[in-house]
Image 1 (cartoon, rainbow, N blue to C red):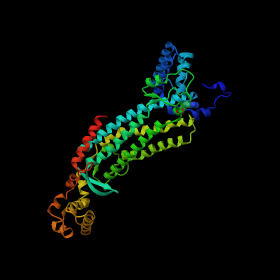
Image 2 (cartoon, rainbow, N blue to C red):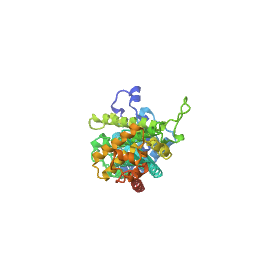
Image 3 (cartoon, rainbow, N blue to C red):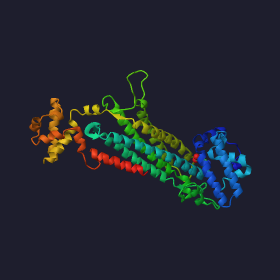
Image 4 (cartoon, rainbow, N blue to C red):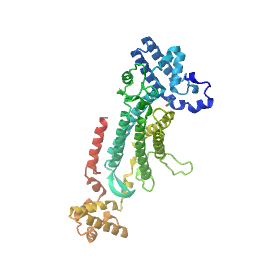
Length: 456
Ligand code: ARG
């Protein structure tokens, strides 16, 4: 298409090196969507006759059909998706096809096509996120009265409602939804008409194409329009944080499901066995989710590093923006597809969970807080409860089956009512601070989450 000023054919090896069909051929439907809008605008601006416009639109639709039917395969001599489509259009329409690129460059074209593609994909991701949140809410509701150990430093800390635990992931994924919405919000302006970098001497109507393609406005600055990839950063930021959240969930479930913890039960259909050890049931889906997170972060870093030294405006480096984007989206979409079904089949082994807390140490904070209510300053209460823990550890006793006289021997403030609060269920139920694990608070939290989701 640019042969006018060249005295040699492009070397074969260069064609292979510079082509981008492996990355951008999947964008073809969106490229054609952009071209149809551009053609209509050229008609409305008087740069094409209505008859020419109709023929071009018909030709583009035919090219799309050929692509969908796979009867048209692109060639690397034509470098990328844009030139392959234009070339095919010109084959179909003759010289008229060559009019489509009026006032346009591949620089504003790819920036537009990529936005259209990403908008479509992110809407799919968004639907998946809502399904994921629904699945988590359902589990939270089903498990809201089950008591499991809560950990800090991966050491037993305080008992919590399993519903509360599920809702902690709900909150993280909900924030991801908000980040995703921001990423979609970055796709609201249209770069088409920015040309190669400086706009056009032709009377293009950028508001027309922006509206036609469902954008709010044309972009404000033609140089910036072809130079930046902020909308990709915004996607990658969402993806990286979401992936980290998935990875942490995966890590938890792998641990809680291991024999030493053992209170979380994973569905057989989502686990795999060992070719050698007959007893094995491995949490591969979770491990791969955790393992793929690094790639998602890597694609983000790749783009950041690629952009940091680029001079204004378009540079061919930008062609590589698609490599990480496509790979990242593929992983994110696959995680989003598998997680809801998987999570909705995760169960708790309640007996095992209680067994793990049978020495009662996990209630030491409850003892300290009981003493605070009896008027003991918290630091002293903490020390006394600590003494009691030590007594139990030294004598192989459980905090839960000490007699009142044993209590009194170490903690004179202990009364009959202390024994009644020393239960795992009671401990959870009584933590009623807003956002706490008390069963009532968890119910409220689930309701709030339900209400939020219903409005999305
Ligand atoms: N294929 C390129 C990309 O994906 C668009 C073409 C711009 N090429 C150019 N020589 N100005 O970014």
